[in-house]
Image (cartoon, rainbow, N blue to C red; front, side, top):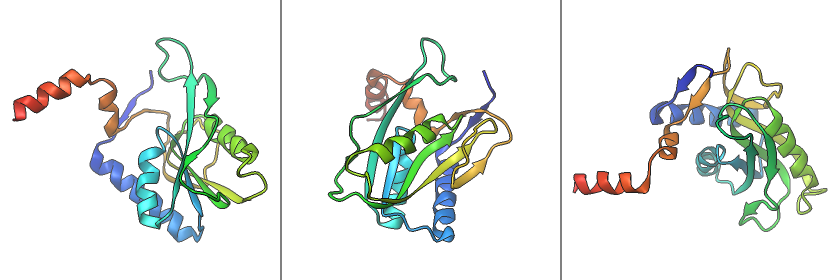
Amino acid sequence: MANKLIIDWKEYNLIVEKLAVQIHDSGYKPNLLIGIMRGGAPIIDVLSRVFKLKCAYLAVESYSGENIEDQQGELVFSRELSSTVQEMSGNLLLCDDLSDTGVTLNRSIDWLKKYPPLRGKIKSIKTAVLWKKADSTFEPDFCAQRLKDNPWIVQPFEKYEEIRIEDLKKNQSLKG
């Protein structure tokens, strides 16, 4: 497995803020933020508050087989975007946590262009990520950190993938 880049909450928030400043300083004015789930969700939450924009969520999963955590498998897309926006159109900003290989971002752009409620209504699609790994073939429009190698990135919320609800209940009862 690749080396690990461990990110705490403070660093994570600073990286998201750096991305927000990049987007603002570029002059790009998105009408809608689209987060690739799950990695894009915390990013567009912050960006939607900073830029006062509505969000949409695109669920994408990668199935790669058992015990393979750092390889991408077949991508499966949701049937619909999840959003409260009634009229989706204009400039879209597609956000994900990272560009690992670039496959998910490329395929997501293709999906959005074919999505019936958006067909013919997209002015532009730009992309934003927190990290671009060295081996990624995709060049995002906005990127907070370009990595010189391909580490496994451990984000602050990933600890919850290992925690059971019973552990949370036990911790809370100890704290009173």
